[in-house]
Image 1 (cartoon, rainbow over the protein chains, first blue to last red):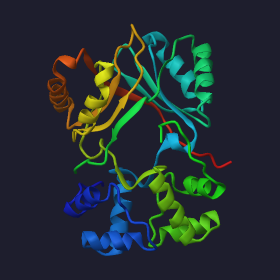
Image 2: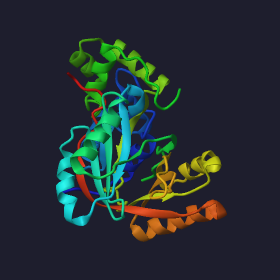
Image 3: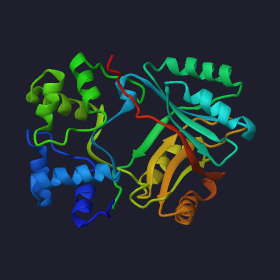
Amino acid sequence: MSRELDSIDRAILNRYQGDFPICERPYQAAAEIIGIPESELIRRLERMLEQKQLSRFGPMYHAERLGGGLSLCAMRIPEEQYDQVTEQINAFPEVAHNYARDHAFNMWFVLATETPERIGSVLDEIERHTGFRVYNMPKLQEFFIGLKFEV
Amino acid sequence: MTETQSTTLDELDRRIIVATQSGLPLVPEPFAAIATQVGSTSEEVMRRFQRMLESGIIRRIGAVPNHYTLGFKGNGMTVWDIPDDKIGHYGKLIGNLDFVSHAYQRPRHQPEWNYNLFAMVHGKDRQEVEQKVEKIAQLLGDDNRGHEILYSSRILKKTGLRLVSDK
């Protein structure tokens, strides 16, 4: 049975969405700041991960700086062909996430490729397979990636 | 450094990334555990972490909260049509709002798609998302030439983003 966050869980989340120390015993160093034992911090993190209150604990890598290609793509698919096109698109290993959205642009997916040049060729292949246009919407500028989520 | 510029990673960096892209080991000495896995020492692994953090390859180290399970059931992808020459100004302003988790400039595809600014807005429910969107609209005033909220109705695929393959 999953349980709500208590005040210690919240203190951990509000303090450590970043700035987790790099040292031999980082959990001990962080636990000391929160005011709990190292083993309790580890146990609480395990529990929040299990209960999916955390999607991850660790380094958040900057995808574009690792040398690969990354883009958000949108498509407009008629209802009657939606399931079929979903299957075609999801079959591409380069499609990382795919979301249905309530809009004329009703399919939104993220492409991740080994090289930036591969994005264009995967888009062409998707258009050829499905017969529908892909609207490529890569990030041109990033303004903020949240580090301020208060719980 | 620009968004698309990549930084040279050597084989050890790549092994470290593969070992940690889904998380840090939850053991008292996580860097020693990673070192064993990648065939290095904890000192070297920590040095690599520090370097990747300084160069921006690692954005940050810590907890990644899941908005949805933490009670933010309303998550709207909001899209805005604002003058291109003011996007830097408004992008920063909107990106800094505490209910916005990501804000990006993306290309328009006119005439079908006129929006150039994307912002993820989080709220307890859709009503709260709409109130927050109204705040953004007020902030933009006459420079808001149109906006929409796109809610996700279904997750069609969700695999972890594999940043570096371990082949």
